[in-house]
Amino acid sequence: MLRLNRKIGLLAFAAGVLLAITPAHAEDASATAAYKDIQATLGSVPDMFKTLPDVAVAGAWAEIKGVQLNPKTALDGKTKELMGLAVASQIPCQYCIYFHTEAAKLNGASDEEIKEAIAMAAIVRHWSTMLNGSQVDLATFKKQTDDVFAAVKAKSQ
Image (cartoon, rainbow, N blue to C red; front, side, top):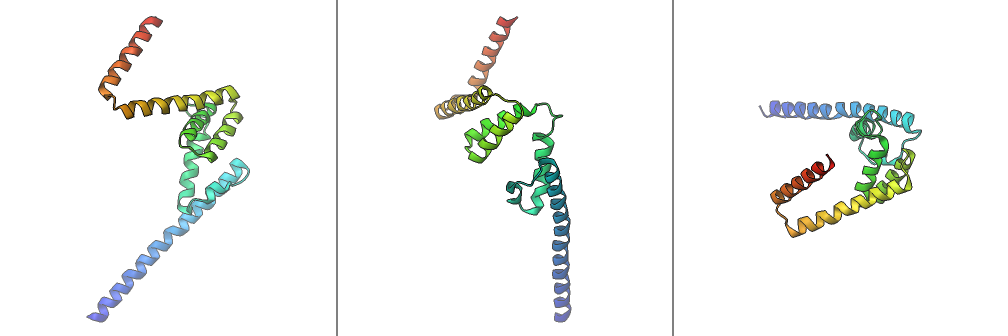
């Protein structure tokens, strides 16, 4: 009986090892395909993709290609990159700031638009700090905001 239990345990272990190994080949294939597509799309594979484990490469590339690089989304490329720059400025991430500044320029953003995106990020951060730090009541804030927008809308008609 002890030998039978050992054999069953050994078989279960071997099956687990095989199951663990088999998906790795599929993941490597998807990473290889993603690297080929990155190369074809960007002309090279930046090291930032190589920081990811193979299992994450295809998903990360699909996300970037599906939203950021996709010209058929609701936002145009310049707007997306200016948003990226604003967020990067707040994180702050020097890599992201450089990338999104250059990408915004490539998408037609002027120096003035770049400055304005960064200024908007600073304004939002400032008021977020003030409102959160002061613990302003959210329901009251929403009511006052709705009232302001209703008044602005009424004036514009």
